[in-house]
Image (tube, rainbow, N blue to C red; front, top):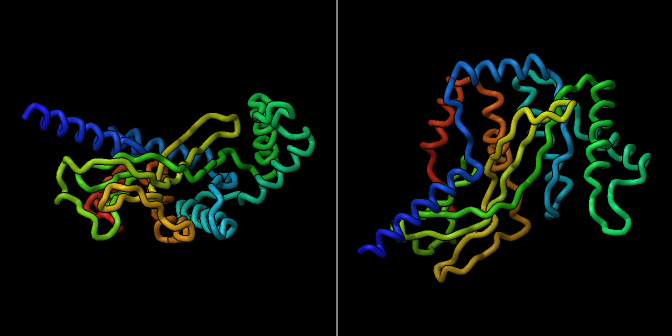
Length: 263
């Protein structure tokens, strides 16, 4: 009995950790949150997109283009002006050519001081040429996600972590494990390099478990190909910087009521 209780407690801790990974820090003070959302729009009405960073997947360029388009649509809906990612990409390439790169020729490691200085110059140049005072950096992160009770929770998304037909033990708290998932990581910086906002939005599972408890990877050609998943990740990652407190509360309630995604 004592051993069973220990397992249950460990299972609860795993579940709590799963929910904290990528889930959003909900604003405790609605007035303060509303003030943040409004001030962000007033102080930074023009946002420059930094090219998204993602792993190599089939149709990589198409996936990059889709995320850039979906990010632009989302932000413009809330009356932000957007500087396309191509502008930053061209400015960054020109900067690298002018300084001879940012990697050490001997060690192959990135020179962080050189990188930060180059980044600051590119931001200043785009601020001067396009009026952008905020820069949205995004990446597709491959993260380890503990699951418990038959559900994996990551970045506001709930998904069954098992292949179709695998036993789920009826949602038992003893059903615990670890899978990997892809999440959109969004960071908004000022032109001076101050972090203004950061959050995650879940995209999709990268691995799942078989009936025998083995790990099975999703086929590469299924990764980042679902537009609704990609759009949902952007919504989850950015909603805390776009929605006022009342709308955010309604949105979070609606998301919690959604059924988990099927394997």
